Length: 174
Ligand SMILES: CC(C)(COP(=O)(O)OP(=O)(O)OC[C@H]1O[C@@H](n2cnc3c(N)ncnc32)[C@H](O)[C@@H]1OP(=O)(O)O)[C@@H](O)C(=O)NCCC(=O)NCCS
Image (cartoon, rainbow, N blue to C red; front, side, top):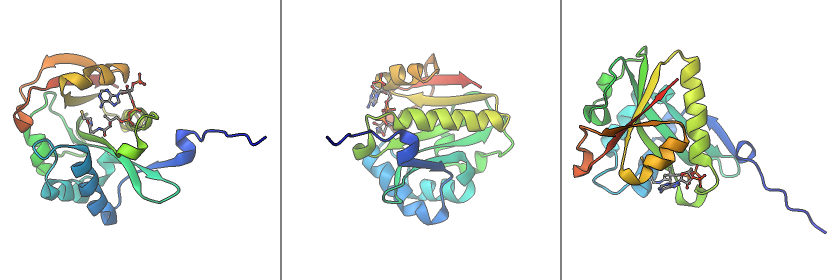
């Protein structure tokens, strides 16, 4: 009888920084994952990949060589999230003690197997090793529980008005 052994996340995906030639993939994945009023613009995504590739973590599907999901952020000494982080890459201070997360994207065909959780886990570990102190993000009410399970604290309603919606501020102490 043939035995089916499910592959682990680490066997299926390689976790690494984004590459400049993957800019179009990053743009496309963002469009698939977020509605237009929430998605990062093509221009802003290009700038992030060009100026702060080390603040991306991508999961590459080892079978296809294509990106299955990614997490990206910006470094700063600030400790309150503001919407300008989404649009102004010049706010990135590579030596900043905190990270503001800007997006967590997993393509639909790769969802439901813990990939977002693994991306977050590895990102937090990497940035802890980089000497960062805290990680901040904003999310809609429906995702608060998901981030709580990943270890984040809900700080309540955010000043962010991104996409005309109500967001929660969440934080993680490294
Ligand atoms: C949200 C998203 C990143 C989850 O990716 P994923 O790889 O399927 O997530 P995981 O398998 O690691 O699931 C982690 C936990 O989050 C929960 N979760 C997953 N998708 C969720 C969603 N859309 N809403 C709320 N909770 C969700 C799961 O129930 C899971 O908890 P469990 O382990 O107790 O079942 C993915 O659906 C996505 O890219 N969505 C569109 C973009 C988006 O909303 N990003 C987050 C913005 S704040």
